[in-house]
Amino acid sequence: MSSPSQPQLPPNGAIAPKTHLNATTEGWFEYPVRVQPHHTDYSGAVWHGTYLTWIEAARVEYLRSMGIDFAELVKLGCDLPVIELSFRYHRAIRLGQEAIIKTRMNKTAGVRINFDYRMESPDAQEYYVTGVVTLVAVDRKKGKIMRNLPPRVKDALIKLLH
Image 1 (cartoon, one colour):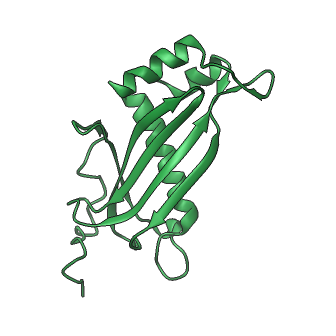
Image 2 (cartoon, one colour):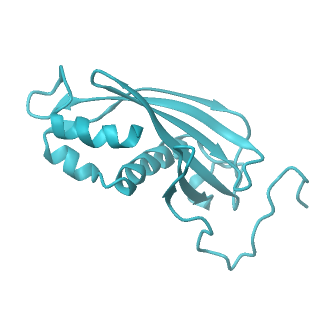
């Protein structure tokens, strides 16, 4: 029996997500997910580590949707490791539920790049998780934080802010 505040689940045969990857007019990129057994803990709630996997996938697909291949950024000699992240859990996502992982680049400050995240029900009536992630540009050869973003990387990321 489902509660009125929970989104209604589709029939078991519905495998393909109804929402396609796209950038929205709000500046949010939407990445749909469906909770599978391997995403959950023993209670059927999404395991906290799964959220990290989902936000990474959403960020890489966000960049790809804007014409920026993450592998190409790495080939330019620039790694973008996560240096800080913060999540706030509002409500558990449960086995079988669908959710939309929304991401957008918030701002850049020197070589720091900040992304916002919202995980919500497909009808946007419930928030599950909100968060912020900060990446920093690192020179792959030297293994040190860069003083400036490489021009090609900076130009590519500027596309996301406009």
